[in-house]
Image (tube, rainbow, N blue to C red; front, side, top):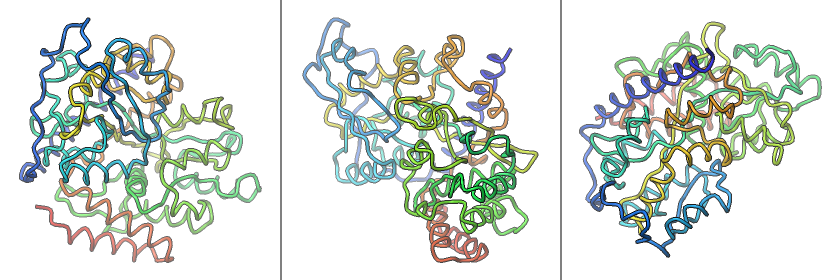
Length: 444
């Protein structure tokens, strides 16, 4: 019964994301593509015979964020089958985006395969900085991935959805114990008790850097309080001081000003936050994903492996609403080894490899429905009961679809929040800065 319920919730999440993506494509319809054009997309049916190795000796370079824990031997079987070698370079997420933009605009590529965020799809697709995967991915793969449309710009499949990264929260139960963490207000009260006890100086672990994850923190808390960042006409609800988005901003300032968050969070990138939590510094992590929960539970690298406990995203007592921020793997239009990269991508999309990636390579939550079901049936998906409950209340970040100007909005939000905390601005002044900067964005 539990497995059916969890699969049903995941299906619901995928439908919601699909609806959001369709809206997002409509918003971006008038965006003009750049002069850079991708090479033609090879067809899945044009692959060489199984016993041939037409790309043997080539090395495919992958550029991935640190949470992809590909071990040195992971690609060995693929290399034995094809003669293609794979090299993985890990880089901070925001730097990957900047590298893709800079190199693509200049007519080159940072790697043969790159990881991209859901929020970059419109930019990459409109500029044609990708190899279109429409004729690369087999029909059974496309039909098995419910969020494929999230990574589609018009008819252009920009990337293979690879990390089904929904948001949840987690605690160090050694510090939190039975103290309440079901609402944001309870989180603040519990954090104050833990701090006063001397167990943990900075109980709430997060990043508030001048980067997109600070925007995510604010938007997720807005969701968890039952609200939306924008109304249906793309006006910021932040203008209303009674709105969940204004309350979320106020809570962030309250946590920071009360000394519940390490001041270093103003400059700590997202990738370092999990390392802080794994080391035993921090009691409550509000923004997490299944991969981070698995990583914090890893006996080989975590000092708190026995105390990691996933919890529903703290809300307002009524809501625990969360969202999904999936990632995909893209072949840049100017990649040096396109054909070999396609073979790597198709191999990664296979059920057995996607399952093994989740189990042994950092807990990358799969995007193929059949793989998710197989993991449930084999008992290889820990914390599934909490995931099932959380997925009962999941929404797309923007119900009306992702706006084409999202990157500019995100920068306006995280710049204002980071500056406001550094300079000790009031919540009102910070909110006004976000509002004014957003109103000056050309929304097309």
